Length: 516
Ligand code: GLC
Ligand code: CA
Image (cartoon, rainbow, N blue to C red; front, side, top):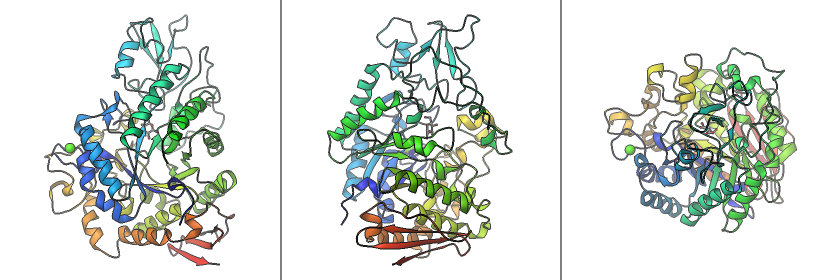
């Protein structure tokens, strides 16, 4: 019944492949594992899946450090396995999106391996190489997200290279047109195979600028907070002239759009963040005509959680900036932040025992907002965050760098539990899984929840099937200004055929809908 494109209203299920299902007993999830569980996802009633990176990679940042963009990491399977996954997903009516990490590659990528050898080789200007200052120090004061300087020294070239994340994730130099050509090739490779869209990782950190670079200025609003994320040195600087959201990025957006427009009905969603309150506004510039279709937004992913008023402010901002469009994608959880259920209890002033009800309410709320939404594996089971990963067992490089004050991102990345009676909760037959299985999740085994009518999985499935029949959600992306008491969020979703008043009550933890 919808005239909108599929992605304008899509509920997208994010799969973290390492932790979804292991099919060959090595303790690591893989593509065949995902294929074997696609029914479970399709029956939930989502429209699409997005799979975090499974490309060849030394896994220093668990796949967000790619050494071959057009091949599969052996621990995840083969291209044939991927094609089987894709055709199974399509046969179940699911679109499939993959994660393209364009901002940086792995240092094991053959182009970086060549680039670092000398100042004169065929890839010498594919990354950002800058001479040291006369005293030998790095060219600027820029910091990496994951700690320390954003510059690392390469003795063979006697130069520094830029990395906004780990030193093993060198930034591509997007002022070199050959780099754009390369990403066009990669995009065509995957579109030709038949993927329906890309989630473009960290596009706001793509670097297309040329030296001489300026130092970042101190962030006057930086407060050393009690919470781990507030202590990240990266946020001590402003990034007005470097590292984030620099103008050259849009050449990348435009090129990707030309490529995707040469295929049928494909979707480009860019992960865009910024330094300040204006990040959502900035993200809109990525979705202007001829650029990306939509932006993956961080505002509901706030590490420390949001109050009811905080959520309202985010929705109001979206109404102001993106109303009447599907160019925005919200998420409450992903592989980078503590799980929404755990994060949101305290700021919303809700007791632990009501966690499941809260989770369902958040899932419904995000699926009623304009644009698409991404839910993260385990949210449909009301998974809590895992708090018990000892430093010795941590895997996330960011977490390890800042341990023990910062828990890192392993706590939301532990494997799915399918059947509590099987070894490792049915995730794997291995003696040891790459991250431990959470005892908390053993009580929330997926296959049990599927059988139980009252489970979050089934209630959300019922909700999604009802949602698909509402013109107010499926035929327009229009929302009115918000109202409601301090503990409520109320808005109308409006299409030509229907006005639906949506009320989310954080006292009773219920959502109600009324046609008006
Ligand atoms: C994105 C990913 C994150 C990764 C980072 C660097 O933010 O979501 O997991 O560490 O990019 O690629
Ligand atoms: Ca495996």
